[in-house]
Amino acid sequence: MENIHPQVVSTPNERQWAALAHAGALALALLTSWTAGFAGMLAAIAVYLLKKDESAFIAEHAREAFNFNLSMFLYMCAVCIAGALLIGATVLTLGIGIILTLPTGLILLAVAAAVAVAWLVCSIIATVKAWNGESYRYPLTIRLL
Image (tube, rainbow, N blue to C red):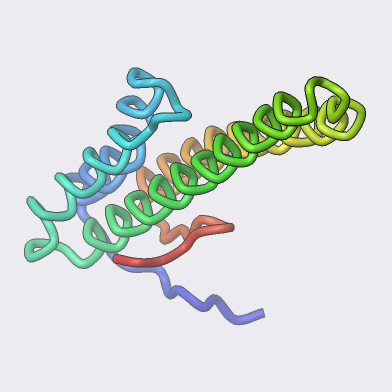
């Protein structure tokens, strides 16, 4: 199978900045609570804005980190909205709706856990790939930048 993203020759400094885009996004998101991981995008966009003109390798990794963290933030917002709607449905039905909302809520919790694990694992993989000078495309990413 042919490699879609050819190996880009990068300097150690470029690899460090690229890894920082992923690791910084992960660290900031963890420090601010991953469900409100909006701060994760800030680290990635800061690296992108600082280094985009100096290195295509850094810009590619910072863009990926930003888009992925934005995607995870939006997915978790959707989970929170769905959870609020489930709670509202339970309250509006005076508790009778819990027969339907409880199993749905448990599924929603499982989805939130899956998103959290995917976010953590993919961020670590991306950091290692960047450190090794390899390209990486996150799965499940809405690419806006």
